[in-house]
Image (tube, rainbow, N blue to C red; front, top):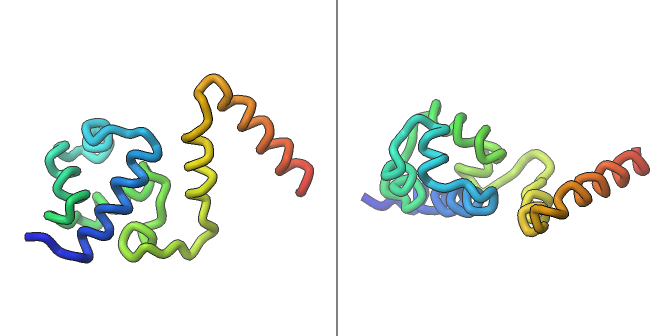
Amino acid sequence: MYNIFNMEAGKRIRYQRELLKISREKLAEYLDVSPKFISDIELGIKGMSVKTLVKLSNVLKLSVDYILFGENRKTNTNHLLEAFSLCPSNKIEYAEDLLKLFLKAIV
């Protein structure tokens, strides 16, 4: 049965999984669940245990608050991950170097 709460959380999970370029199969492997279960979570058909939620949070680099409620109480770094995901793979090292130089300059 679909649950609007689960559907919204599922959308956030799917968006981040795709942003990080992780397949459902790979995410399922990380979480020790089936790819069908990942699909069901993303579609809002099923919920998940606290243990799976914590693993998911770690793998997707999202806070549990954000997954469940769409809120990030910590600094939101998703836009940085998104920017890096758009960077061509042969230029990612340069982007990382630039970010490190920037951080060194402001600290």
